[in-house]
Length: 410
Image (cartoon, rainbow, N blue to C red; front, side, top):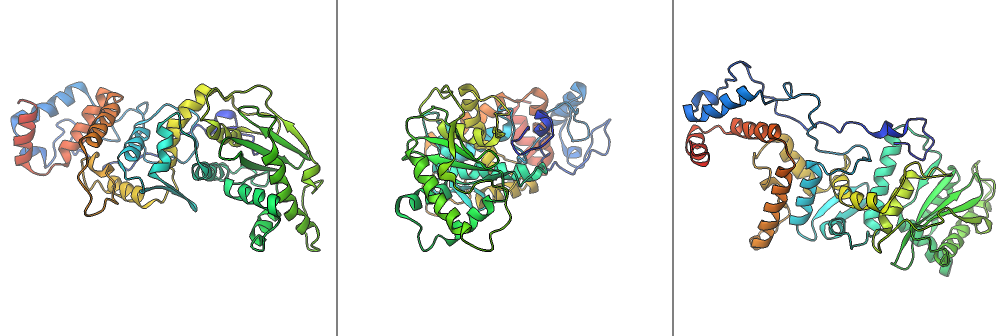
């Protein structure tokens, strides 16, 4: 990705293969006969499946699978620009839909997001809240570090701190604001500071402190140029902390030409609205933070792409490499250890209370249709390969004889 932090990589350098999920370490000892200790106990009817697989030359393991096949993945370690939903994204949606409202599904750095907050990603009429935005900002920071970009150029701030700037701008600096002053000290080591601003729980936009140009750059998907009171108050709160730093004798050497940000010129960088609905401003904000170079957007942003990004974001946050939410950690351990071959069962919440009621029929129905959505997007090779992996995982000959012969009418 041609990220806005001074990298010389091509725009498509960020498009890399996702990590392969841990596959079964079992290898077939004889590719011609595809024999295994388990299959030696199969009846002639069950062996018919094995024979058909050989005749179709369908891949059963990682070595045989053609390279052009889609890799099986379990985490994101980069920010994808292709918003096509993968099986992993669809599984993340199932997890969100079937978890309890207070289940912790995302924990990246110190940002925690619960199930009820993630539901907005499955409904185009819902807004993103502060925690959702902060979580993706953590992903942006991770990507900057991953690509060895110039970390000194951009500082990505989260909405919590910009909210404290607005507080200080309204009523002055608090006694407990020393830690904020120390954060502002770090700003002086960077050329651009990205500040997400919320207008009274009504609209998100991005303000960029461009120290090199000594100007405030505003990126607003709705181009609400008439209402920048929140920006003015936020800048006043920030100025209080800059004044404190300027008065200190041990002020570090910095790259800013002017510390008086309240006197900087405010420049609107978008002249026409690009947001067509009333609920996706937070998504536009995230893409502004990801693509703004200080002069232009490195990638085009449209309402259509934002609509796709909303659903993709559910998978990105849930499956981000550094997500340490207990529920997701347990899920990943189950996937890695293959402790249960039934992938639908392991997607259920691990935090269900002991005395909780059984799932209502509607929830089961939702899970069924979500699973069918995943299966409908899989090719015949993936389906048969997965079926064969499932068969190999069953160590009970009686189960193979009874269940599979009955289910397949053999």
